Amino acid sequence: MANTMNTGSGGGEVEQRQMSLGTDAARQLATTTKSRPQMLGITPRWLLRMLPWVEVPGGVYRVNRRLTYSVGDGRLSFSNVGARVEVIPQELRELPLLRDVDDAEVLSALASRFVQREFKPGERIVEAGQPAEQVMLLAHGKAQKLGRGQYGDEVLIETLADGDHFGDMSVVESNDQWKFTVKALTPCTVMMLPQRVFEELIKQSAVLSAHIDRIKERLSKPQDKAGQAAIQLAAGHHGEPELPGTFVDYDLKPREYELSLAQTLLRVHTRVADVFNGPMDQVGEQIRLTIEALRERQEDEMINNRDFGLLHNADLKQRIHARSGPPTPDDLDDLLSRRKKSRFFLAHPRTISAFGQECTRRGLYPPIVEVEGRKFIGWRGVPLLPCDKIPISEYGTTSILVLRTGKDDQGVVGLRQTGIPDEVEPGLSVRHMGVNEKAVSSHLVSTYYSAAVLIPDALGVLENIQLGR
Image 1 (tube, one colour):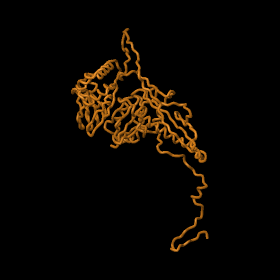
Image 2 (cartoon, one colour; image 1 turned 30 degrees about the vertical axis):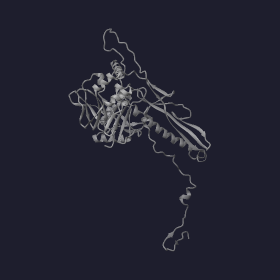
Image 3 (cartoon, helix red, strand yellow; image 1 turned 180 degrees about the horizontal axis):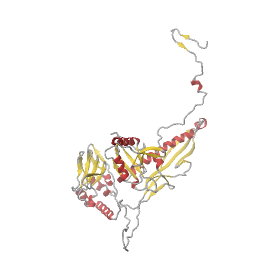
Image 4 (tube, one colour; image 1 turned 90 degrees about the vertical axis):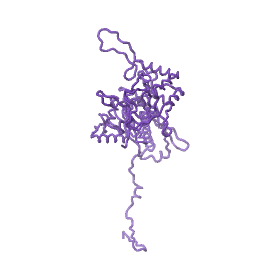
């Protein structure tokens, strides 16, 4: 009989003989269909795809600009012991008036004179029309700078947050009254320095006094609305008036961007490459996945590197704070209004989701924008492209970037050098380094890159977006 029934001493269990070849044995003779090695963490890398790339054969890219007289603007950091906040002396150099002051004693003397004040939500920190007699540093919290509209109604000028300041320029501008009101949105910690104390220290310090004189001289020179050395022109005249003479002055210390790099040493045993190299090229797959990891790191560096990353190199005047917390259409309008020819927004996928929720809450339907055959939600025709390299803090805060790109539009450009030895992709090389005494072959995988912002308004950042509300 083909089948036999075996009954054990227990008298109930039946076993059936195997009648055909099992799959476990059969697969030993079969050729399996296999995928290429898969890898978590590969993203579309929209920043690398959308940036125009500029060749940098010398390894350094210099951005020449017109001479700017404006003293700049900065944000301060603070230290604290419990609830007591202290001004870090060197951080005072972020104030326009103290930008070039490097005298530690002067900075320490100024820092020690600040007085801490606490304000409740809704409380006014300063009032328009009141005497402007204090330098104000916002150590913690969020506040609104408010002005008066044409018909006497209150209008929002901007939102202030940690590190912002106001009132310091009154020393040189003779501004004896506040032209705006600042109202606390959240509990705010403000460090205040009376203007009379500031002026006393100026009189006592020759270094500080000379510096203030230089600032006054710089501000007295003709400037355009961007703070650049003015080009004198005549227009709308009749007859033969004497025309003004002029020239275009250049910045004597232009910024230079040196190419950065990401590298790794890939090791593969020759036995693997020789014996186990079919049907897939083992070395080729190892190199492919290593290149993917390097490109991911490249995009991360181009966003987060403190030297050239876009998040840290946006001009402080091009940084704005979210009005209420989550990203709203009003916030994106504010970003777009500060530049022309915005090409795309860059945001974390969770941030894009939060923006969509805000639009739904208002009954708005953001338009769909097509980029390279793919569809994204956008705003005012500008697509919101996802990028998971933009960090989200432990408190759930993040940022949105908006970019104008290209040399012709004085925008943001990527920097790289092509034609390097052993190049396998533009700006990326795989160099064989030989085999060691353990029969392990090594390959040096390198990519060179950077990013440059040609003029300040090419890049804007919406900061302190609160997710999870």
